[in-house]
Each structure stands twice: as structure tokens, then as C-alpha cells.
Image 1 (cartoon, rainbow, N blue to C red):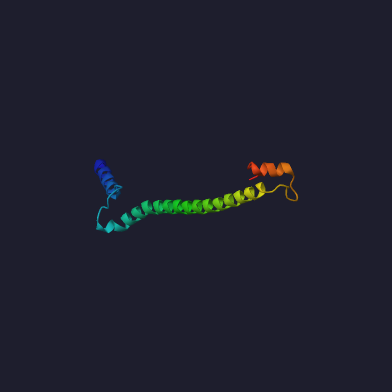
Image 2: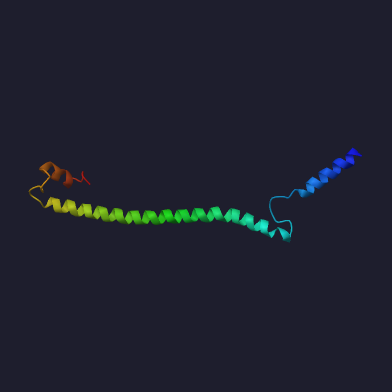
Length: 102
């Protein structure tokens, strides 16, 4: 008698268990959609963040190149000077020519 009760409990509990994986029936399509979104959302977020990082790196590189071109122009202009500009002495001009104050 007890064995029948235990078997009935085990059977009822086992029937409530669902394997992780493919949908069990056509009624389980919402669960499959949730699993698909659970997989896709982090992947799409990851891709978006990498694209944003790549765009930011592209913009930063552009402005770095503009900055370095401006610094090159300053160095070239200062190398043509015989007397240092106001506020600088000869050692400052020498350091600028060697690229130490960029």
C-alpha cells in the first residue's frame, strides 16, 4: 500500500519535470521564444557595445591626428625663429625643437 503511494508521488512529480532543450509540444513556443531572447539579447548588447567602442576609437584617433599635426606645425614654426617668443627662453625653444614639450 505504501509502495503504491510512493510510486504515485514519484510519477506525479516526474511528470512535472521538463527537460531543458527542445520544446515539449507546440504549446511550448513561448518558452522557446524566451530561451531564444535569453541567448540573443546579451549577444546583441555585446555587439552594440563593441560597435560603440570602435566608433569612439575612430573619433579619438581623428582628433589625435589633428592634435599631432598642429603640434608639428608649432615645432616647424618655432624652428624658424631665431629669437624665442615672449615668455619662453632659449632652452624652451630647444626643448620644443626636440619634441620634449609636446
